[in-house]
Every structure is written in C-alpha cells, then in structure tokens.
Image (cartoon, rainbow, N blue to C red; front, side, top):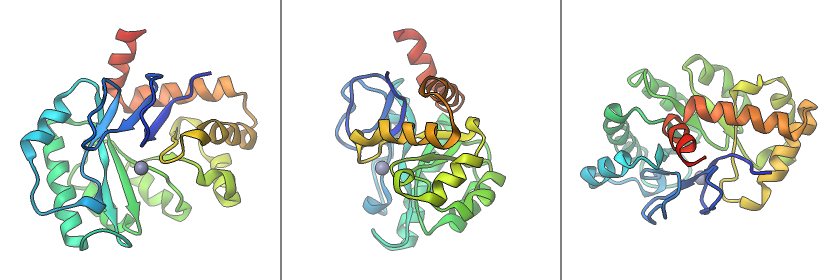
Length: 215
Ligand SMILES: [Zn+2]
C-alpha cells in the first residue's frame, strides 16, 4: 500500500511523498523548496525562490525554520525565515517548519502571517501543542513515535484529522510509523491511510490538483 509522506529528504517515485528538494532539483516530483535554518544567510536569490515556488509540483515552502542548537546566529535565522515567509505571502503555500527550541519565536511570527498554513515537522514537544494549535499551526510526526511512549499517548488523544506523517531522514521507517499509529489508535492501515490522504488534500492544495491530474 502506498503511504503518504509529508516530508522526506529522499526522492521517491510513488507520487505520494513531498520531497525536500533544496538545491538538488526536484526530478519531476512533488516537492518543497526553502532555505533550511542551518543554511540561513543574510541574503539569498529571492527571484530564484519565487521561480521555484511558482512550479506546480512545488507543494510547500520548506523545510525552513529556527534552530537554537545549530546553525548561524538566531537573528540571521529569523531574518532568512521572515524573508521567505514574506515571499510566500503571494503564493500562500503551506510551510514545513523545522523547530528546535524556538516555539515561542515561531508563535510570535505566525501572528504576522495569519493566512499561511504552517506545519511543524518531526513534532515531538507535546507541551507546546496547545499553544501551536491556538495559532492554527499543524503538526507532522515521524520516527520519534516509534520509541516515545509519551508521543504515543499524545497521538492516541489526537483527532485523526489533525495528523500528518513523515519519513524525514528515514524512508525505511515510514511504514512502521503508520503501523504504530494504527496500533495506538486501534485502526486499520487502510482507515488511517484514507484519513491521511484527506489531511493532505486539506493542507497541500497544489498537490491535490496534481494528484487529480495524474490519477
Ligand atoms: Zn527534514
């Protein structure tokens, strides 16, 4: 069964995963583009980013974000993030966010971009969920679910229509992540898959268009 993958650093050819393309080119796949906070810089080619976001196969801006443990100084990261978010105001693509210890900063920034849909990828900090939800920020969960009992308990309580799943750096673990959700929520894989497809359609609007065209 093909499983829908909200964020992957490895290209797959199933048409159901969002490949984080960075500078690698997208190879004709659904993908996201953006400057990762570890690579944040004072200036970048804004025209190139606009062109990339105009591509119909580009379904999201990302992975962008903030990381207090790694990468350049936070003010450089914030500046680079804000510039990308401002460019996205014309596109209104969903945003895939990397967040390490910067929930407060992201929540503050979100108020300036109320129309954009943001997704915190590899969500792990359960105690931040309520604050994120208040701002309408979505979450995507990956392999951390496999070994974190607290995250499993959290997923058990989470309404299914709030959930995205991803492989991130671990393409081989996507199936296990799905199976863990099924186990925790006592669902069949088919039921879960169908709901995740709906969630994809809600969030990644361009991808939906592409999906209809190609299937
Ligand atoms: Zn990632």
